[in-house]
Image (cartoon, rainbow, N blue to C red; front, top):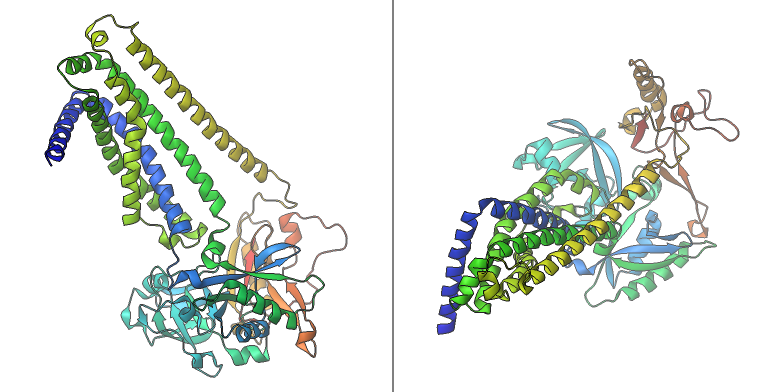
Length: 573
């Protein structure tokens, strides 16, 4: 007990002495703290992002039981998507071992109190939220009866659109809103941190699938392909469902290139594309942190050399090596602690500045936030930083010769040689780390430059692109191209500086807006023909500067394509 009391007393004395040293050299203390704060702040920010995206569990009940279905073909692995009959057969085949929900996304226009706006929406099976284990914060989720076409139309709102377009009004339940031309009744609002686990989609409304409508028109208003999400029953291995899925798929797939199916953890599937980039970023900021520690260690070595006489006097008066090491490590710990406080503020500022980019570029970005796990990691990082830059100067101070320190001309003494060797090692390490970091940054910039100068086959200068959506039901008895799109193009062409304009549902190197049309045979199990349909207006080739190898592009005399969907999205350029 007496040793513990003595240790606490010594630590308090070391803290007071360290504070006095910093007051005598405030510029040194401030500069050292700023250098460390930059290193700690960047590491904390990137760790917060990586931890939230790569390591935090999904915000769903028992997320370890949630899986995505991946189809392996000759073209590689890709997320499995199927038609409605295929999905229902999958549900039947897995009824005793798993719960299968499915969904498809689309875009439309919502007429909310704050005004009309384009939204991303999801049509889902009624059991989607039960499979995910998520409940609305107000209201309720879908019931099985609401999957029948003659049932009143209902929707769930995301937290963001509830706040943005409905001012967070808790009386929104039961209110009728128009999504496209269809009146929908709001039955609930999803939690703030809920994000639908389907790639980079950020849906604002959810609606239940209408089974009767799909049975009569499989390639109808919501598209022909559905993305399944699987929750395995407790104790069921993934291999059991993979076998059932392969057997079920063999009943309706007639293909020369057989597919293999496997279950991938939903979390792993969501982050697989961003994991390499985040790991590379972690390595880069770790090098920045090491460079900062090397810089500060060099400053501490210079500080130790300047305090040689003080160290020698303390040693002559009886201060042991352990006591000397403890004193310098205490100073390092105080500097590291002050830097951690500043680094926390820098990390919060970085996350705030890049919040929008993180939300749009990363899956499950709602998990990226400073919480107690990050604070615990910051404590560990603070201790590591103190040890990283403080150990070598503390050891050199403890082993400095008393006689050499008391002399005025001690430049040739062994203590000075040890200081010089340590400074040389730190300098070489810092230069090596800087070269590695600069080399990596240079290679990345070289790659970006090369990618930006790859011939794309179309012009990219003097082009403006915007997305537009028109509810197809409003024009179901009219030609939408003649009534809506052509007048819009004519108006755009009249703007000063506009040479030409065109419309397309797909742009090069961009995610296309397309329809998958299925041509069903008399017996659909004999194998159906799937065809991707993309639409464009005449003149698109001229606007993009694309040369035709042979033949011609569309002109005004060609028959317009009329899709039966509820809405069509086009890009004007």
